[in-house]
Length: 187
Image 1 (cartoon, rainbow, N blue to C red):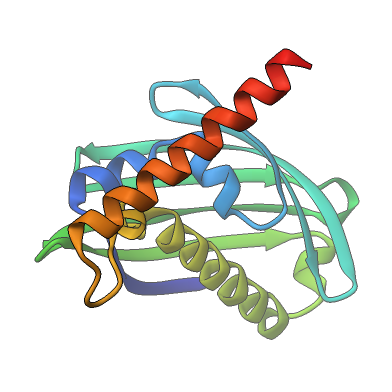
Image 2 (tube, rainbow, N blue to C red):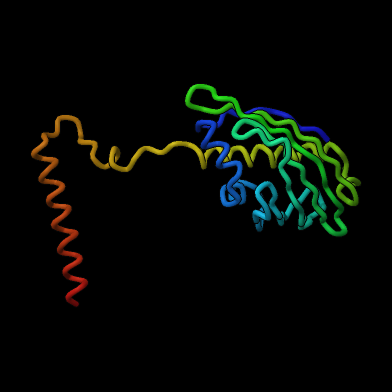
């Protein structure tokens, strides 16, 4: 099976590279990932629950990075065992190129599956791999999407509001908070 594509990540190359090497971010973005632990500078151990058609399995595996050219490219090699469901192994080449304030992430993955997974057919496996890949990148992009600073959202005054009106509003909010704190501490 081969899978390739590219995505525009809403973050600069350094931030994207850091996220691709952060086990907590990756775990949150991989559907069915139960654990992802760093076992070395360039290696991880993972447990992922997957369902492809009628076959469900819990894969335990390892990931190892090679050909590392920080912060623009690497190859990630993976292999996992899913008990009676079979095995999966392969590699993916990943490259990052700056594109304005964003990063163009390109990937080319190759994988082999065996056991029951191989028996369910390449169309079903290819469709499941495409779905998992899209889910990963959607979650990854969302993690890296910039959010408006709270100060800008809170401090934005309605059209036509005067500065003195906004100061009065802030004093009122501060007074209410102080009264609530005093009430609960004196009880």
